[in-house]
Length: 149
Image 1 (spheres, one colour):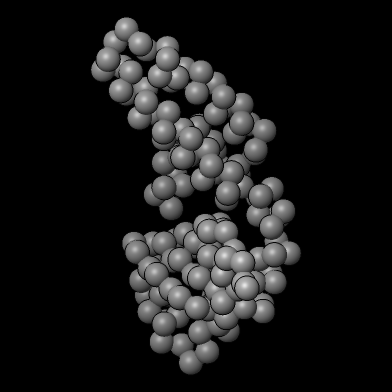
Image 2 (tube, one colour):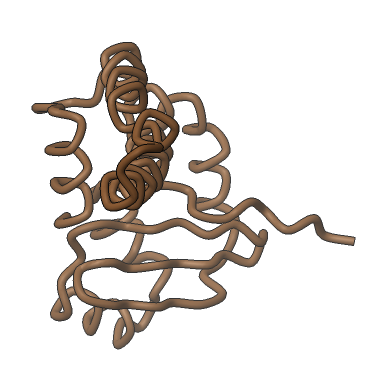
């Protein structure tokens, strides 16, 4: 959640993410912070390069959790959570990363340690996750599906 709020603040996004507004904000910030604008001053150029990286990362991240992006991938997501089993789990801070047997990986934001422990100790992990995690937290597809041979 910290990462989401940090990027929303960077792009001055409040509430739900609107892709058109995000794109406009991104373009304006990139123009302002483009490293080529600061060739005379080395310290500003370094700062601009770092800001440029942050803008690119933030823009890609916010696009991945935007409602329009989620809606576009909803059929694939439902197919995965309903038909593929959980293959691997990683939890760090408030981020849960779930890899499924179909090769896709999703990140869930805001999952606390207590809920993660309940998930790991559940008799039927898949059912517990469907009921308590999959449609209850902000998520994004974090890795492309690995092609099965």
